[in-house]
Amino acid sequence: MTLNPAELVVVSNRLPLDVTFSDDGKVSYGRSPGGLVAALDPVLRQSGGAWVGWPGAPDFSFEPVELDGLTSIPVQLSGDEIAEYYEGFSNATLWPLYHDVITPPEYHREWHEAYRAVNYKFAVAAANVAAPGGTIWVHDYQLQLVPAMVRELRPDVRIGFFNHIPFPPEALFAQLPWRREILMGLLGADLIGFQRSQDAGNFRSCVRRLTGLTTRGHSILAPAPGGGRREVISGAFPISIDSASVDALARRPSVQARSRAIRAELGNPDRILFGVDRLDYTKGISHRLKAYEELLREGRLKVPGVVMVQIASPSRDNVSAYQALRDDVETTVGRIAGDFGSLGSPAIHYLHQNQPPEEMAALYLAADVMLVTALRDGMNLVAKEYVASRVDGRGALILSEFTGAADELRQAILVNPHDIDGLKAAILRATTLEVPRQRRRMQALRRRVLEHDVSAWASSFLRALAAS
Image 1: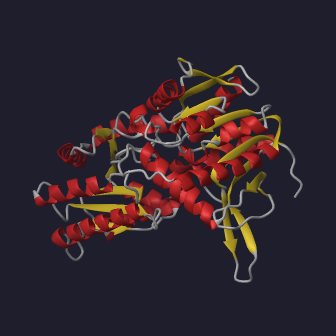
Image 2 (image 1 turned 45 degrees about the horizontal axis):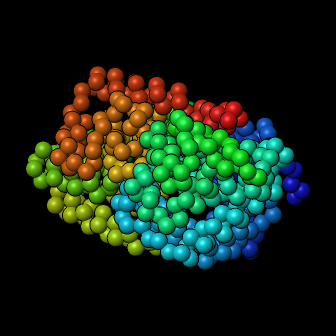
């Protein structure tokens, strides 16, 4: 297809496409669901925008394709590039470094070289499609060099960057051998958004200490192409969910019937505890399992009155740290099930698989207590999905204070997941919370989530970018 210049170009690691290969070798494309896609779809349609990203398979590419008014532009990556840029530098170097070094980052020069080369591919693709004076919005830690690369290629465009994960304090970020390059890459943007004010403050502190550039409040004086200085704005833009859609899904009679069936399948316990996470060491799954197991051993929770449901979505199964985590989680689950469960009265129900949206909504509705015990998380949208699903106004949310969501969802029961005794006390409190208090808390939580949805987030960022 002939590409028209796009007034708005979104750049992310993955394209919002589901690619399907038939037995006869034909390829078909479908729009993949997601909050970011839902938020940006109206403005992309209105502006004739484009989305640049990787299609999701090695050594695979296609001509730009238009689906439902959105043009997707693929960036082809080889198997080696995926291994080194994505699995290596992005997820074995940056991810652990940005998540408080919960597991040690690995620093390999060949990974860094691949990261730089792949970032340049994304930058060129975005620069080639952007209209004169247009806007390019880059997303997340995999593409931190893209803003400066685009600035060199297209000094006429406005550039935004949003970091979906935490940004570490200077004492941790300073470990990165390529720390200055990353900072200068980000400073190619006009506006840099973070989930929390703390993350934006960490970034500005790193800029001051590691580059010597001047910061004034939310602004940074960065080098301009051709000399001189330009102002870069940094700040917090906490992301959210398509809360109206989640609310509507939870109101469907079929979903509510499935919620009742889930309770029956679990033996109609008095309380269902629920956790759903990617199987990732940042999510604190082992911590919540430890707290639950201790409460059962101490007799303060008893089966069949209580059951835990834990869904752990597959994540980076070929990375050793994730393989070790899976072994640890499944060993603990097996011990809890064997020591405390019985036929018809399970102590825990564990699934290592993804669930469709309808099933997730039914599980949220069935759960009396939602456990979000992340050790470090940029936002944690699961907490917001649980709140948006509670159309009955009941339920209790236990939320780690180390999530971005904790800044907004103040009516949750906030916990330090490293404090196992404190986590146990929070679980006991949540399981005994009277219905009137549940309703008061949930009403406040739902007001926040329903009013501050993902569309409001995208609009606020784009307005700030236009004004920067």
